[in-house]
Image 1 (tube, rainbow, N blue to C red):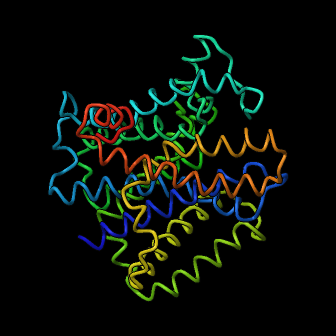
Image 2 (image 1 turned 135 degrees about the horizontal axis):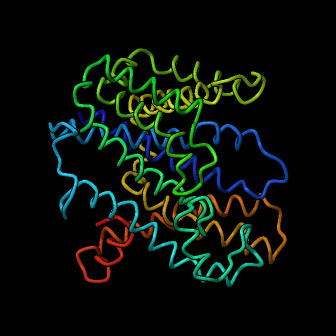
Image 3 (image 1 turned 120 degrees about the horizontal axis):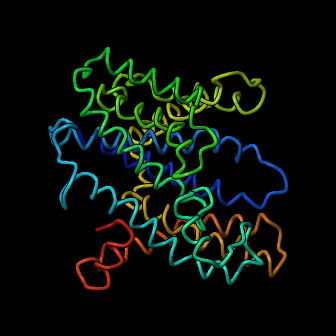
Length: 339
C-alpha cells in the first residue's frame, strides 16, 4: 500500500512538472519537440492520476464507491465542490479585474463586463486562467462516475468493468459532445476514458503487474513515445495509444525513481495541486509582462516561468500548511481547496 502511495506521489510531482514546463514554452515561435511530446500525454496522465487516486482512497478505506453519501455537508458532492469548484470560482474572480488591467500583455484579453465574467466561469475554455478548464471538467467526471456506480451496480464485475471502459473508449473516439464548450462537456466525454483507466488500473493493481525490469519498460515506452511524436503518421486512435504509452512511461519512470530511491522530487510531494492553481501568476509575469517590457528572448522568459511556476506556488503551499489552523490561513486554505 505504501509503495502505491509513493508511486502516486511521484506521478503527481512528475505530472505537474510536465504541466509547468509545457506552459513555459508558449512563447516559442514554432512548436518544439519537447512541447509536442509533453502535450501528447500530460493531461491524460492527470486524469489517469485522478482516477487512480480515487481508487486508492476507496481501497485504503475498504469502502465501495457506492457507500459514501452523495449529499450534505459530509457528502461526496460537497467535498468535490470544496476541492475543485470553490478554488475555480475564487481564483478566477480574483484574477478577472487584474488581468483586464494588463490586457495589452495578455494572450487572451479580458472584456470587463458581468456577461464576460459569468461566461468565463461556465465556459472553462475561456476562463481568465485558461489552465483551469481542468477543474470543472474533473468535477463533472466525478459526478458522472459516482452516479454511474449507483445506477449500474449489477455490472460490478470484471466483464462489466471491461464493457464500461470500452464504452468510454468509444465515446472518446467518436465524441458525441465534441464542440460543446458549455462546462467543457466535450472535454468531459473526451477525458472520461483516462479517468476510468486510472481507476481500474488501481483496482486491479496493474502497477504491480508491471513489476518486471522497469528500466526495460522505461526505455521501450520512451522510444515509442518519441516515435509517436516524430515519424509515426496519424491514424484513428493514435492519440489514445500515444497517451496510454505516455502514462505507462510515467509509471515505469516512477518505479525506477523508487527503486533507486532518488528523492530529488520528494520535496514537491503534496504540493502538486497548489502548483497547478498558482503557477499561472508567476508564469504570466515572466512570459507576458516581463517579455513584453524587456523584449528579451523567449527562452529567458521560459526558464524564469518554469522555475517560478514551480517554486512560488510551492512556497505558497508551505505557507498554507503552516498557517491553515489560523484565521487567515484557514480562509486561504478553504478558498484554494486545501482545507
